[in-house]
Image 1 (cartoon, rainbow, N blue to C red):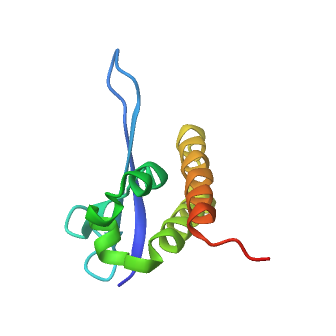
Image 2 (image 1 turned 135 degrees about the vertical axis):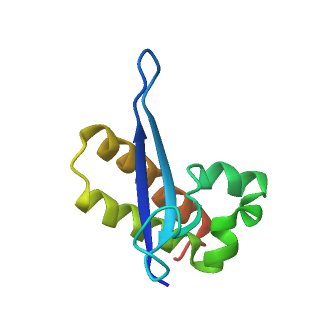
Length: 109
């Protein structure tokens, strides 16, 4: 599997810009939507606190590596992205993922 984050920016007249994140598998196809795996969970911390993260398709695919994979996908996307609005959204998600990951890790003294 070669997972990658695909980011879709939708701009319609008189409506707010929508930025969607989906995970694709480049080993299946280079074309979207043929390579669609799952939506990227934008609220990992909230879902994990409510106990419904395990119901997400992303968690079902990546399991215990959910946070590491989310962080890696976002970091790769941030390096490649040129659109400033999308970069801002990626940075916001990356902060949330890193915060979620830290809350899940036990304290080490």
